[in-house]
Image (tube, rainbow, N blue to C red; front, side, top):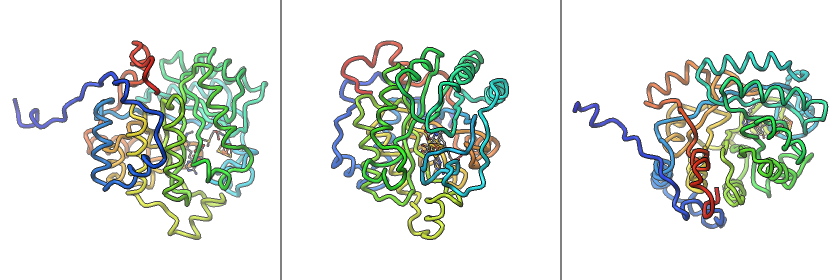
Length: 359
Ligand code: SAM
Ligand code: DTB
Ligand code: SF4
């Protein structure tokens, strides 16, 4: 055996979860204590959890497309697409189905496994649903997983999307319940949870996370992770976004004026690590903000359990790292794009996650 073979990373087998591996009874104190660990100890523990349940050398690639941009009536303080923001983002109509499918085909050819379609809506209207359903069916026929993020959903809409075959629905809680009202006033934290319930009830996988670096406190980050990790079923995907400070948004301008409020990279990695430890089976997605993040910080996030990213050079309106930069980073870090099913879904499929498993 060559030296290289001896030293190559072992592919840890993905183990079926012991009943106790997944908990949804985390206390805030426990989560705060994880955040307080010495940094290297925290990352080490998160890496152990990651290796137990996931193939740690693989990162899932997802592609985002804004199918309806701007002109959103909500007032989310971070978002360039709110009518309240003076960001220069122009409002568009919902894209034609064929144009969306073309874009999905390109993403598939570039190696993406999941296609996420986002609309700047408070909620979809009845007149939007036929086109949305066609998009879901068309992308699925191409052999990709589908994800949508369209704002609030009622039970009937969630059922319609489930019937169309939607795999995932993204709806973020964004921050702690306490901080939430300072970031968004046009819908409540409880509204968000209700949509997540409707999505879960319809049998669609849940993608829910939030944003760090909005000037929140450590206690808010604890509250944010706590809110997700104590859901009856953990979200299958947990996107952790670093705020992309966009000029003309309340939070983008606040951070430009008070640079000290900017979160440091170590605290961002801590948040990823605590999400990984508390939600061991979930995919933790290193989402917005990678464009301005060093490779070293991203590497620490992967070490701490992040195992999914958005690819391409654009998110919804903001810049993303781009395929070439990501390919170079994957080569340097020895990471591989994830093939096949996520562990959580695979375990559900074989019934390994029924009873005793809260995820
Ligand atoms: N309108 C839908 C909604 O709010 O549910 C879907 C799209 S919305 C843009 C999806 C998520 O992107 C938000 O919940 C937020 O977490 C994230 N996001 C939006 N703008 C961001 C920014 N400037 N920086 C980081 N994350 C952002
Ligand atoms: C999520 O949590 N992050 C993505 C996805 N879900 C829809 C969106 C990030 C948006 C970043 C800002 C922008 O592109 O305007
Ligand atoms: Fe609208 Fe979504 Fe942006 Fe909020 S985050 S303003 S709901 S597009």
